[in-house]
Length: 313
Ligand SMILES: Cc1cc2nc3c(=O)[nH]c(=O)nc-3n(C[C@H](O)[C@H](O)[C@H](O)COP(=O)(O)OP(=O)(O)OC[C@H]3O[C@@H](n4cnc5c(N)ncnc54)[C@H](O)[C@@H]3O)c2cc1C
Image (tube, rainbow, N blue to C red):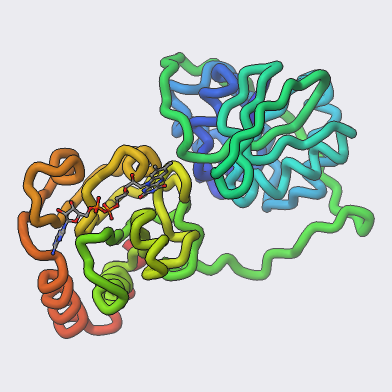
C-alpha cells in the first residue's frame, strides 16, 4: 500500500499524516513545494517519493502519475478536497475500483463509513484499488526516519482531452461556511446553551474571532445547528488548532471527533465534567452571559480592519 498526497505551495492537506501512517510510511507527494511539505511528515513517513507537478491539475496529474503508480496495488489518498478530486481520476486512469471514505485500511479488509457515519461497511478487496481515508478517524502511531528520494520528473500535459479547471485566484475560506473538518479555529456550543438565541450570539463571537461554529449532537438534534456542524463519531471529525467549548460536557462520542487541538478552552458550570478536565483554560461560569459580554467586547472594541487581521492570522 502506498499513500498519494497532493501538495499545494508546500502545504499538506488535512489527513495527510494519518494517510501516510495507514500506508505504513510509504508516500508519493505530488504538486508544488513537495520537499518543503515532506518535513510535515516527519515521524510518520519512512519512504518518500515526490513529483514537482506545478499548479493543481488532478486530471492531468492522474494521466501523468498512472504509469508510475501502476505497480502499486493499493493507492490511498486523504479524503481532503484535493484527494477526493484526484482519487477517482486515478482510479479511472488505472481502471480500478474506488473505495471512498474509508475509516481503516488493512488489506484485504477496508472499513468504509456510509450514511454520514451511521453505518460502517466492511469490504474485502480482491485486486488493485484506489481508496480515500477520512481525516481525523485514526491517531498517529508509527515513528520512522524519512528516506527521501530525489525529485522525480513528471511530464504533465494539459490537453483539451483532460478536463481540468483553470484556477484564476485562490480565495481564503469563509470560516462561517467552510468545511468544518478544515477549520483551524472552532467555537462550539452544547446543551449548556439554552436555545437558538444563544447560538446566534455564539455565531457572532465566532465571526469576530475568525472561527467556525460547531456543536454537539444534542444541539444538532434540537435543530439549533445544522447537522453538518455536529462534531463527533456520528458527525464531522475535526482537528483545529483552537477549540472553544461553551456548555459542552465532553462525552466520548463528542471528543473522539476532536482531533488534537493545540489549545482547548472550556466554559461550563460543572468544573468536574470531562471537557473541563481536558481544557487548557477552564472557566466555571454561565456560558450564555459570558458569550453576550464577549460578543459586545469583540464587536465594539474592534475596527473591521482588526477583525480582518485576526481572521488572517
Ligand atoms: C451512538 C451515539 C453516537 C453519538 N454521536 C455523537 C456525536 O457525534 N457528537 C456528539 O456531540 N454527541 C454524540 N452522541 C451524544 C453524546 O453521548 C452526548 O450525549 C452529547 O455529546 C452531549 O452533548 P452536550 O455536551 O451538548 O450535552 P450534555 O451532556 O447535556 O452537557 C451539557 C453541559 O452543559 C453544562 N451546562 C449546563 N448549563 C450551563 C450553563 N448555563 N453554562 C455553561 N455550561 C452549562 C453542563 O454542566 C454540561 O456539562 C452520541 C451518542 C450515541 C449513543
